[in-house]
Image (cartoon, helix red, strand yellow):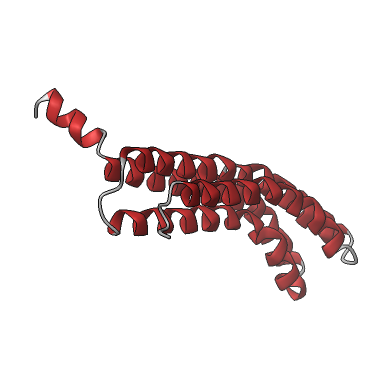
Length: 163
């Protein structure tokens, strides 16, 4: 393949948009799986000791998973934009920006996994505080929500969602 043909593929707006979707889900997926690994190991240990509290432990442990869900929504909108026809170069680059925004913010799931792990351990010591410690876990979520909203706003401003 010639360099010129390769550049045509790499700079194709639909290819750029697909890269944005894939990067967003991939980065957020790395964050979510790492965060869940951290919180899940503590949750599994506590579940073995306090099986009756499984649901409350699961709520604390599950939080890092939401970041990849936000990225999936943004990526789905990007793919719908691709399916709608040929995007412009500007739209392609905006899709990369939206995907990277939600993907990089999705890496906060790693820190959220640490907070969730500590919350699960604290709950194991005092079963009267599940929703108090949940606040610390949710604090990390704010950054992910901001990245999600910004990703959607970028797609709207680029008219990728139609309208």
